[in-house]
Image 1 (cartoon, helix red, strand yellow):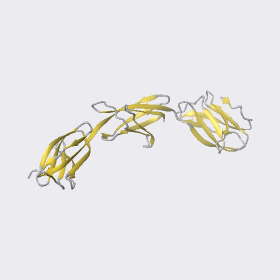
Image 2 (cartoon, rainbow, N blue to C red; image 1 turned 135 degrees about the horizontal axis):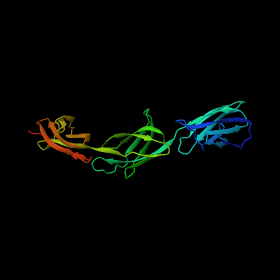
Image 3 (tube, helix red, strand yellow; image 1 turned 45 degrees about the horizontal axis):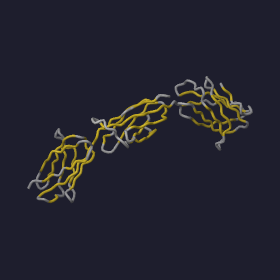
Image 4 (cartoon, rainbow, N blue to C red; image 1 turned 180 degrees about the horizontal axis):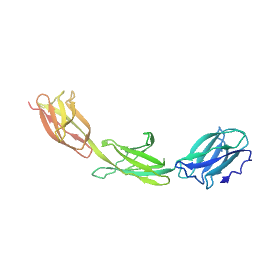
Length: 258
């Protein structure tokens, strides 16, 4: 144990700094401040995790423990006319890095949103991927997390990751691209408003339906990549095959039969 010698020993605050799972933390800095934030004194914990600080008068003080590779912790301690024991627990922290790429092509996804949530579902961090699809979190408390990535025109993805004290975890993520389709319904060389437009997948299931607007226009957003049949019904039915690929918008006009 390393004692603080900067202050006259009158009233003593002492205790132990431990990690969440129990072991003592040596070399942690324990700082005592008044309620206005002015520093009263500080001490390092010894090999047993113990510290000792002294104050000249009683009162309520702010006490902070910080250590390399651990999340700082702050609390209040009330000092009367006797020695006060105040133990503290700090959580270890680690880093997290990774890359976000598109499934199949391996191309990086820039400006994707990365969200980290804890086991209670609380958001503990967010980040954006860079031009090369990379992201990083410098300091996360030890524990298990869910990593979620989202980006326009892509299906969100999630992965579980465990952060350990002093370690750098890596978790890459793959996004499935999604696309959109827009077009116009025609009949007799003019736009056809109010046509019922349906989209059928390769299994023959209708996955989306809309109506053409007053200009005969329609749009389908957020579609999985694949081959579809576009069916329009109004003055007379019509169907055309359409392929959605590469996460891009697809033009698909359809002309109704007489």
